Image (tube, rainbow, N blue to C red; front, side, top):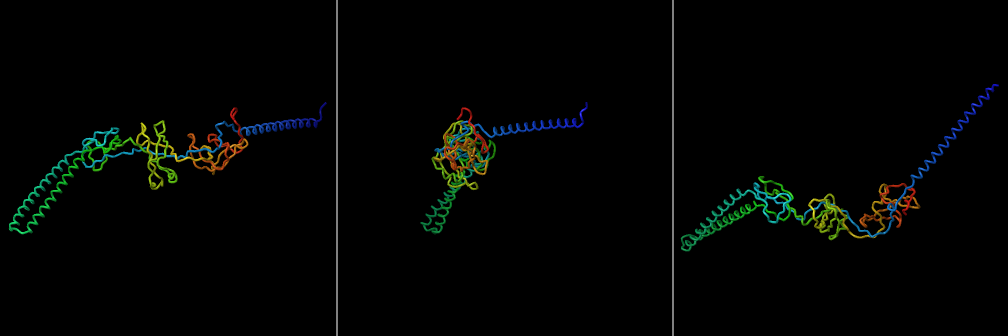
Length: 377
C-alpha cells in the first residue's frame, strides 16, 4: 500500500526541520561555551600575582640628600716643559711613564749658536770697557790741564760726558752678556715639578721653536675632580662636603671632598664648576672618568624608591593597591635622597602607609585584581 505523496513530503520537511533545530541548538551551545571560556580567560588576565618584594609601603624616612656628579680626574700639579730658545733638540732622555724630580735635567738644545753669541757679547763688552778706560784717562788729563789753565772748563765737561757715555755703553754690553748667558742656560731643559712624563711631543734631532711644548709632566700625588653643577644645585654645595665616587677600573668607591667652588658660571651652559679633592688611591690616573653622589644634607619626608614613580602619563603617578585592586594616584615628586644605598624621592599627594607597586612590576591597568603569591603575605 503506497503512502500518499503529501505524507512523504511532510515527513521529509519534518526531518529537515529536526536537523536544523538540532544544528541551531548545537551552535548556540558552542557559542555559550566559547563565551564562558573567553570570560574566564579575561578574568584570569585581569588579575596579577604579587610577591612581598613587589610592594612597598610609603612611609616617612630620613633621607640623605645627594647631587649626582661626574667628570674626569685631573692632576692638581701638572706642567708642560717648553723650549725657551729655538734650536735643534740634541738630547731628550725621558719618555712617557718615566719619573722625574723637580729641577732634573731632561734634555738639551744645540748650544753652538748661543756659545757664539756669548763670545760676541763678551767681546763687545771688552771693547766697551776699553772705551771707558780711554775716556777715564782723557778726563784725568783734562783735569790737570784745567788746573794749569791750559784748557777751558767746557773741554773738561765734554770729557766727563764722554766718560758717562762710555760707562753706559759698557753696562749695556754687560747686560748683553747676561742675556746671552741666560739664553745659553735655557738650552738645558729641566723639569719644573716632580712627577711622571705624560706626553713626549718632540723627538731628538727636531728643531723646536720658542715656547714649543716638549714634554708634559703630571704629579699624581694629588688628584681632583672638576664637576659641573646646575646653578640652582650649586647653592646647596659648600666646602668640606663629602662625596662617594665610582671610578672606572676600581672596584671600591673612593671618597672625595669639596675644596673649591668657582665664583663664576661657565659661559653658555650657566653651570658652576665645583672641585673635589680625591683621596689618594692606588691605580688612579689623570683622565679617568668618575661619577658619584655629593651629600648636601638630611631631610625627613614621605618617600618612595625613585623607580616606583611612573612617568608614562602626562603627570607622575604611582600604582598602589586599594581594596585588592590596582589604582593610579597622581603624585608630586620632591627632593631626592638616599636610604640604605637606594635612591628615594619625596612624595606629595599620597597617604602614609599606602601600598605601592615597585617599578619592576611594570605598568598595570587600573582595576587589575591583585593576588598575593602563596605563602607570601
